[in-house]
Amino acid sequence: MQWIDLRSDTVTQPTPAMRTAMMNAAVGDDVYGDDSTVNELERLAASTLGFEAALFVPTGTFGNQLALFTHCERGDEVILGEDTHIVWHEVGGAAVISGVNLRPIPTQNGVLDAEQVRRRIRPEGDIHLPRTRLICMENAHSSGRVIPLAAMQEVWETAKSAGLKVHLDGARVFNAATHLGVDVKQITQYADSVMCCLSKGLAAPIGSILAGDAIFIATARKKRKLLGGGWRQAGVLAAPAILALTEMTERLGDDHNNAQYLAEQLASLPDVHVCTDQLQINMVFFEISKSIDETKLLTYLSECGIKSNGTEDGQWRFVCHWQIDKEEIDKVIAAMKVALAAA
Image (tube, rainbow, N blue to C red; front, side, top):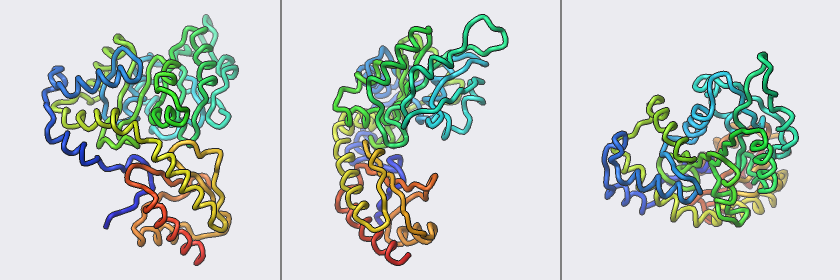
């Protein structure tokens, strides 16, 4: 069966061009620095994101946690939004790997308030207090929203005035750039390091990028090895990642347009309420007001060849990617119409 998979953009299969690139990739031992394809990817990523250097890592969580591990010492404190991926979906890694204290603060739809950040920066000289070391932002936000550049600039300036570093969880930073209509460097200029995923909507089979200045990346490279992330013949993975950064970043607008179409079609169904304030990238969040058996709905969708996650905090989420176009969306809407009518 050819599934219509709406669970996430992590489910993307590599494109035919990526499969060809994998087969033909030049490889070497990356721990020795001998893999020319990995080296090419890291140079391209650094240039594209606007940093001196970059490092190819297995996953986005690995990249974020490696950034904390590199920026911080044990016992340091990290200020970040309470609804960020690092807080919610990275298995408490900050405590296990870096030994840092996360200080989450409320956000306004994912936007950190610079004044609230400033108030939480620990004063120096008090032996009772941890040292504030890092501020983390996320753009695009996992809620489907894109953070305005002005808000990022305010947090950046607050951090710099206090002598602090800023890390950007940019898992979908190219989606954010697409929505804002800007070069990605206009977003990453407000960070000392950035992580971006290549295996989400960009469709590479595996991998993320951590970028920063040369000293930061040299330190991160050693810590990557400590964490078991040293690659060997990784060119077979870097080759499709290069296409992710070049070809696939250019087509993200298609996913955003398809998400808008999906949202419009869902909104036309009785009892479905689309969260239009979260409709800025390739994700559609919605709620169903009538009482339904969630398990039965998921089972019916599965019988129709459609994969979906269940609700989280009462919200459903469908995610568009390169393997979801209007033909697939129309099939989803038809199935949802039948399922809701029978509920």
